[in-house]
Image 1 (tube, rainbow, N blue to C red):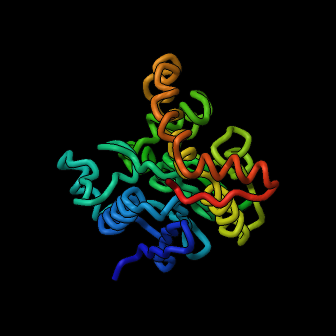
Image 2 (cartoon, rainbow, N blue to C red):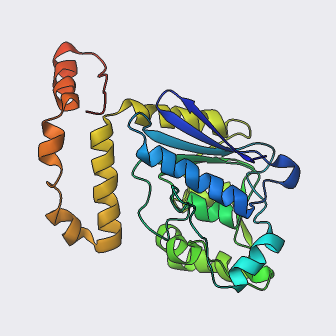
Length: 259
């Protein structure tokens, strides 16, 4: 039985982690299933946004270390299943669609690392984040050493990476890791509302924004600036651009079709 459930609701693909009896510990099979879900999101013409959330009191207490240890010891890293996209964004192309995440309770190790790959983040007030690897005799290998210093600030990140200490939702908000902190139980509806607003926006414009922002992040602002108009002709010639003008003239909300 898969512990990763996917549901399509409108233009949103919900990816739900459903192993609360094990505190949503990540197994290799769960990793594969999340990667496959992201691959399906990327390929679909109808899906516009992904939403990752989890059942139970905790988002995840970490990985199922006994099952991952032999894989790590062999130096295999995280093998990507055929048709999938690496959920840690370390191998191959990333999902071209935006992803929103909602977290609560324990958000440990891989939970932090997948959060770092998402685009908008909501945390319950009771969320505790931690990179525990140095307390287990290993080190993070899902992207935290690459992204946490960039997104949280060097010394902020090193304090938690090097000690394994936990930090709060308030600290995550202060340092920009999450965009909204809500009472426990409200993280999913808050994240869903954000996903719905993104899904209502023009898909071609959303895709171009992500593409340009990621290029600036990986290759630098100057490179991204040279490519700002690469997609402009296609976007401006789209039905959605025409709908945007009509909706403005008619003083109504636009209805975009992604073409």
